[in-house]
Length: 82
Image 1 (cartoon, one colour):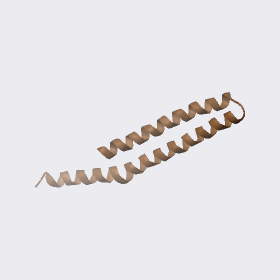
Image 2 (spheres, rainbow, N blue to C red):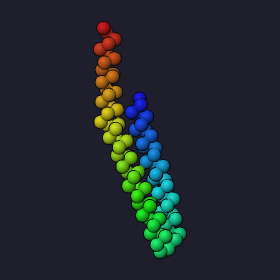
Image 3 (cartoon, one colour):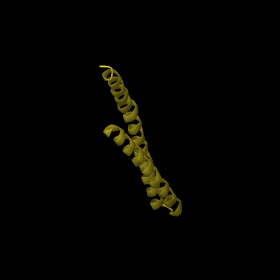
Image 4 (cartoon, one colour):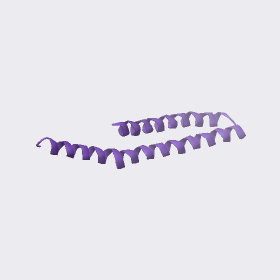
């Protein structure tokens, strides 16, 4: 359950980073010149960071949480008859 919660937290963090990135993209359109380019680069970095956290969340879920859940369910099935 702890790993599942961590996975969900990473996914929520990714979504929040995407929201912030969208706000920064709006700022990018309001300014001109170097400041505009700087906001665009910050926005792109937020997008990249969000994508990494989303991938980590997915990998954590697929490679650790699901196999552990299946293992736990199988152990519980064998314990009941015994």
